[in-house]
Length: 361
Ligand code: FAD
Image (tube, rainbow, N blue to C red; front, side, top):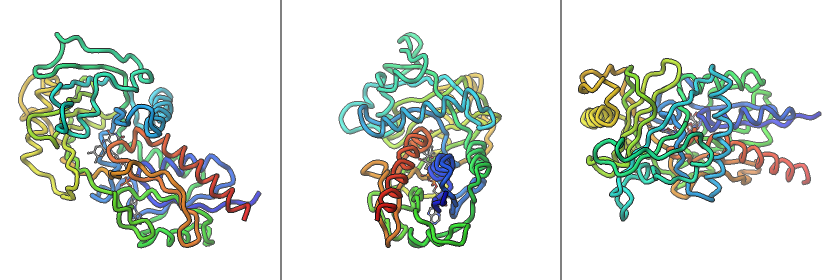
């Protein structure tokens, strides 16, 4: 059987998941080429900085909700059967304030923390938290079984799974997306490119998607343990600040966040914001420090990442650029992990469709 050469540009969660799913189709011969690889920490590389948990922000009945739904099935399987992937089950305690859902105020992340979300039917043990058990200042609360992904384990695990399946990974920096066709490890031109360049889709030639914007997120990784995922729909410190606590699997520490600063490209951590993040986290989740202050947090590192937001929504599309088929899978904002399998499945379908068109010509 003749092989089809494919280059996936990008080694974040989108590129690696797409490469892994493509590798399960025997006729595809795949290269992943990227400027950044698992192990790197860089402001141009969002994936290592994510919490990362499963808390869908998609609207009910949309394509995006379908991608999130399909991703739960896969993440649930990993948490159940593949401890080496660094994905574990955690109870999520999500608290909301009525004021965060009024008018246009409130953060994009906070607004998603509704007490009646569409995904209540797919995550196990979804239930309301009795009013008497809510932290001070919150009007509602829900609890359900979610998963947390330790990105420091999960990205290398995805890489290993790709390598096991024969995918070749290499470094490459492209000024134009169509250049990637010439980087296939076979030395021959690739028939198809998958574009998983995240925020750089706004800049890379041939794509230059002007609806890409960063949503800056600052975090503190600590050694302290939390009772589960804890999140609040808003804070009194401004519309672009949020509070969440995400315990990572397998000794990965606990991520404290955060903020959602759209349009902010700053790669440096702000120490005042870091203090507010820690203060809010120990208030909302006192068990972190046994009810003591932030001086009892043991900090591993501060982090800053840029969520690759596409104002028009995640782009899963195919088009011909300079005579080569390109399948796009980028623009996952603050939900690249929780939509990763659904989006990659959709991208793999488009790869098949594009190659079928090509075969007919
Ligand atoms: P990236 O990880 O940015 O990867 C892009 C890849 O493309 C890199 O390998 C890069 O080198 C390569 N590339 C780009 N341009 C070029 C070029 N010109 N030439 C060659 N290579 C190129 N998501 C969740 O689901 N749950 C969460 O709890 C969550 N929490 C988050 C918290 C924070 C603080 C942040 C910052 C993000 C969070 N996210 C979360 C979002 C998630 O991290 C992103 O949606 C996801 O990582 C995007 O992955 P990606 O592969 O599209 O992009």
